[in-house]
Length: 432
Image (cartoon, rainbow, N blue to C red):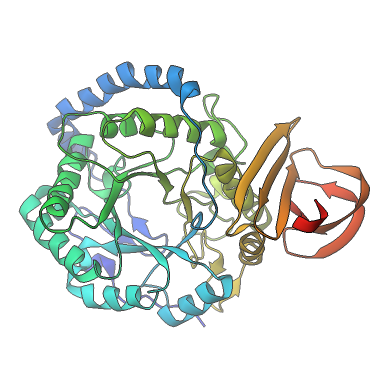
């Protein structure tokens, strides 16, 4: 059956802002004169973005090699985004099937009147590790008293069940309601002051810049506002560059994460923790549900490969605490296609296998040479090596090993086929 929306965002968002339910994001602002006027109004902030970038970013880039290493295990690393506006019962069954324990749930502030429905949804996952993504609209950005009142409601109603909140999202896209970093900092500061006064147990994260636009991140982390982030959040999409190993301005995913970690380490505004709260690839032939044009879309097969390799590279960096895939159910970019009949994509099974192989493991080593990558992890019973290569090849081993392909098919072999689709080779701890 087709999953139906439980409400209509467009009935709530105020013009010129409106919500595109098909792609789960606001429509582009069509009034260019309005956008130009708002950006002129925020000219000082835009200037500060430039200045902070010129002074801070090069210094952080040069000093990133002296940063001490972290040790991150996979207990809460594999996250998934779910929404109330998809069928809650079906969502719950799918979450249970995947055995997910780390979830992100969106809460739009313009839906404050339906807070009880969201609380009920959140309570149904009381055994999970949950991050609430508080999404803004322009009314809450402009009226900080209005914002504080509604944030107080959110924290009061959800606080008994959730302790982590992402305050605001996608701050460098005007269609989401912010026209400058200063506007976001004032927005976040309202939440931070409320936390200090009434909700000290809560964990607030930001600034949630989308894409590799670290000039906005730099400004949000180096400023004179009185605020602190409990962790740094980013919507680190790399879909426009194709594979996660591909580079943008000389930075592939691994190097983008390294620089983001350096910004967090040197910033006086945040703890050194990173949550990648959105990433995915849009899927071909899914318009109007794909969030981008067909040019950026990929096949379901490539979608699966890129998803797995994104997670593996992010974990191998040992600098990211959690990656939240966006999202479980979405025709244009999710693990489940909800058009007409509910359909599990290949990526659903691949994600399930990845969790079975790697959840609750700890990092051992990572190496890459000649476009071949090897990630080694372990737990109390086994060691798992994950291999993939951008140049497919066969490799002979000295003895037979237990090997699983990306869909969990098991073989015992002494010759492995390494390809763009990751494989898992496991060894019992007693055989080492």
